Amino acid sequence: MGAEEQGESYVRTREIRFRGPHREPDQARAAALLLAGCEGVREVRPITPECLQVSYDLRHTCLETLERRVADHGLHLDGSLLTRLKRALWYYSDETVRAGLGCERGRANCTERVFVQQYRRQRHGCRDSRPEHWRRYL
Image (cartoon, rainbow, N blue to C red):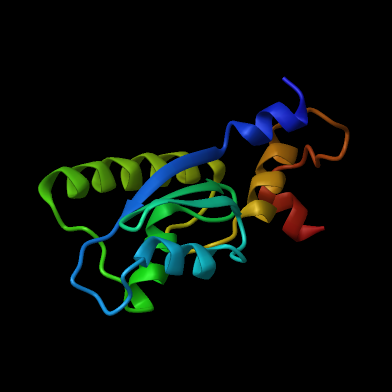
């Protein structure tokens, strides 16, 4: 698998749903403008005034962070049972993949840690074969 294909496996496309009443009749469009410049966001597309489709790279951000940013700006996220169940599943899925990459919860950008972890897994001659206590001693 090439580097480009591997990078695409960390891209997720999800929906963010909104619920009124709100002073902004097209909350999806307002959220799209807000998220368009965020790190890790690949594409943002309002589907309806209450539904936004967002594609993002898990190595840089997660759905929970994006939704928190939208909610912090006063937009109302949908709180229906089905939406909350989907949201919980997506949060868990994102968190599990990011934990496997070495990202800490709450840390937005973990790209550096991902590359460090990949470097440590590769076989190369840059490793010190001495035990840890000997490395500190000498």
